[in-house]
Length: 337
Ligand code: CP
Image (cartoon, rainbow, N blue to C red):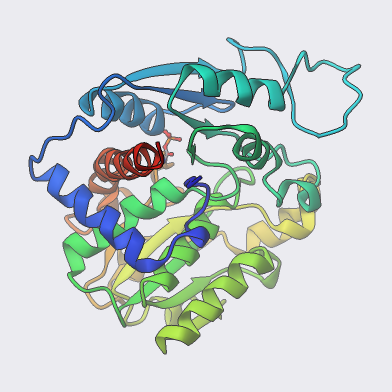
């Protein structure tokens, strides 16, 4: 069965097909791909965009969304197979996945890492278990990657830049008062490299390198496309000539869950906010962010409120790409019978 857990499992052509359909849906095409069907949206973490865009998108496709707030409205869930469930968890993910599969036609899950043990959390245990035990397609609404955000980002880049191949994409670490999940940063590397862009990653220090899985995937994709993958600490060099700037903050993996020791390195990035002076170095670049975003910490007001900022467009495109992805998964499932 086809799931949408990570874009690593999908080739560029298949993703482009989804993007082309998303553009048609945005232009007014209608679809009843989910007529008579239900989709469970299971949230272990807060959301504004993901929750509303999935809920509305499912309704627009003729389907019925079932929103479950796993923090308050469902049983605490165990995700480890073979666990002796004598702690807080009342429900095992195995039963949750099997039961929801009897009710709904697709299951979408948001479950951020808990910042406890990256060696465990890098395996994405909850959504992986859902995918193993579900008999309907599973969609990732953000775990250790954020593939729906990737599609929205790429749709937005294509709308504004046209062909993105060989254009220069800068993923810049930006300040934030506390360490955040690496999901969107991992995803930005995956999608920009997969679609043939030159990829630069600007970080204050090597401790902000992302997990090898994503760095290696980006390196390999760039090698296949004949593009460059560069890890940079020089702000001026990184911005110079960039055509797209993507801002994101994340916690340094060597200090995972022990953030008090990260402070020194975080201070090295104190000047990394996206501002007019840095944007002036670019090749008239567009700039975006997945949102939510702290203004004047991550990106200066003057940049956010300029025509170069595409964060709102990218957020709108979440709706269209998710509809196109759900349509594709649903049709594939129907074809299987
Ligand atoms: N970008 C994004 O996923 O937004 P929410 O966290 O509000 O869903």
